[in-house]
Image (cartoon, rainbow, N blue to C red; front, side):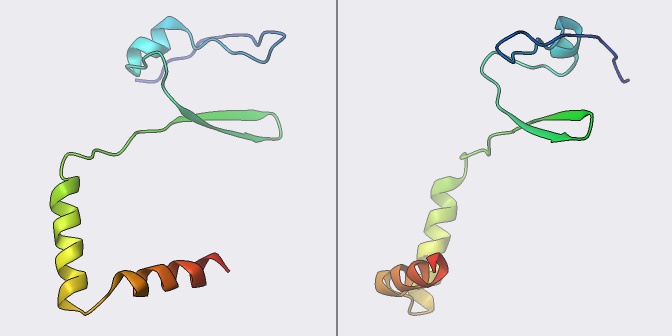
Length: 85
């Protein structure tokens, strides 16, 4: 269900997201947004932080992959340097 509300911008550029919208989207204080503007349209997109729940397992698999394929720390550092150019 879409919600429609009207809000205004302060002299400091702040915009209040109306309470009904915040509740509907379960928005909390401190949430981060991407702001996109084009012509007469401003779009806010909530940024969802990734879950680091299985980060240790991911890192173990990454280390094992590097070991199995003979990839060294030096190889990674050199690849990063090339990518930065």
